[in-house]
Image 1 (cartoon, helix red, strand yellow):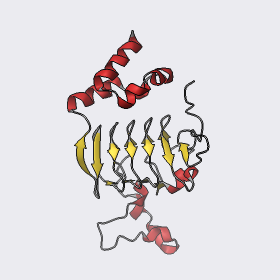
Image 2 (image 1 turned 90 degrees about the vertical axis):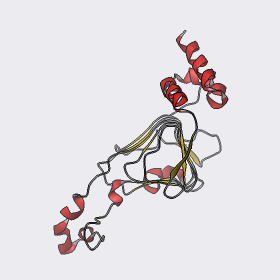
Image 3 (image 1 turned 30 degrees about the horizontal axis):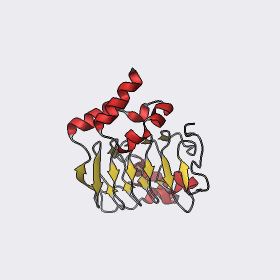
Image 4 (image 1 turned 135 degrees about the vertical axis):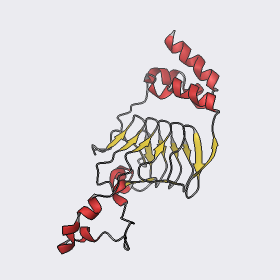
Length: 213
């Protein structure tokens, strides 16, 4: 029996872990199957506590099989303030006669959607800034502040986050992306879960060949 991607709490007795796909309701947030968030307080408040300043229209897209540690935050474009004048204060949102100048904040340049690939691991309290793109297979170290794009299978850490190393060579990264195990049928993933978790790229290619034979 394969795991169910539509169960809110996939681990019996562990209410701190939620699958995000069945949880999110915002049309501006898209999450793939089996991506989860772990938080001992209230993981079900992910949309309001972990996706901040999401006033739209930018989207947050998270792929399949991503692991989000406690306190991971996505800062969206609504957090931006003007910096081309003497003050960065957002006067128009405070109302009164200042609201007549709302165009001063609605015209801020957008940084685009925030996009996370598949099989990305986010450490404790990592933070992702607006418009960042994180490649599949990446690892985001605890406490990192991600301000730039992260390559596929890259490991980043620090504030601002810098590339520490790549998990695989460019050639092997290309092979892994072509294999895209996260798109395999659930039964095939189950049959080859040991290879996916601890095998080599060669092993994974051999498993994929079995699927197509």
